[in-house]
Image 1 (cartoon, rainbow over the protein chains, first blue to last red):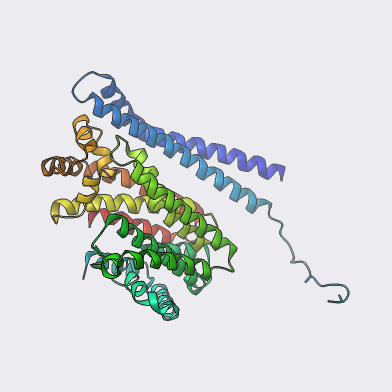
Image 2 (image 1 turned 90 degrees about the vertical axis):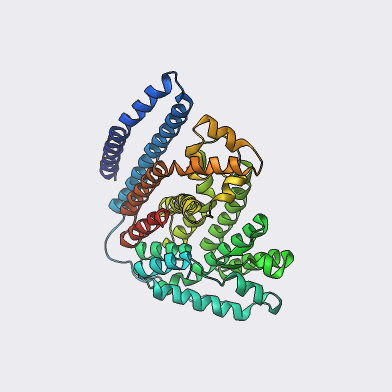
Length: 100
Length: 311
């Protein structure tokens, strides 16, 4: 169980890290662009700031969702790996009659 | 035939769910025969028209995604979801003072406010009675009812406020998301697809917002009530990033010029809104692939819902 736990924990940590990297690689350029627009004074600064806030929050939310998804997957994997296998137990029966 | 009927026929056909929906309709018909004479006609009216059946389809899709057992096992759960959904529609129509629902007069307009409110209570009572022996379903129906009530108050409290896309997601997640979330949980008999259901609900809500906005432009009606009431739709949440639009959004009046300017500003955000919806659809697909044993039906549902904004 300890081995399974370690394996699942490592795999989950790697998956979360890869997921985050993919997400940030995809979204960071646009976010940087918005950050630059938001920090330059001009007519559209307010709009850029609002767009930056929305995108930053969306990225944070999606990062959290991806981590949560991988954690749940890890729990499912751990459950599947450690579930007892083997013959079904004999049918339960009462060893003696009960007076009801 | 209405646009809703076209969309639904397509949904049920594409998902191969005609048999399940037929079982559901038979269940509704049987139930209507057993209801109190005083409320039979208004209840039949409430469940008539051209219902879209998106929620039962979600429930059946999640059942298929996680179980090999026949759909007939899930019919009672789909039935109670349909009752709860119709209860929420009756209450919505009373609050909004709507004239029509699904192409016919609302229950309130046809039978009066008292009958409408009593019919909504009757639906809730029979929904709980149907699952009285099923603690799992009762527990989740209670959760749904609590969340729907709170979401309605949240949405109204947050109207005409300078909020953003994430606020829209919170509102959509509790309003529509909670219903689809519970459909996914009941259909799957587990929390495995709960987040999937949540995302489908948010996606449905967003596609409806965008579709209404397109209707506003192309058909001369649809999203104008939301703009007038200061409801934070997805296009509105994007449009009010602009300071001038935000100022107009915060005003509480019926000035046609202001409403037209706001409608134009929302219209200009439709491409960005589609991108937000694409990202939500991607998240729903990731959930389906990860947690469904047979992901095909739940993936097909994402694709179908995603198309709704382009109707």
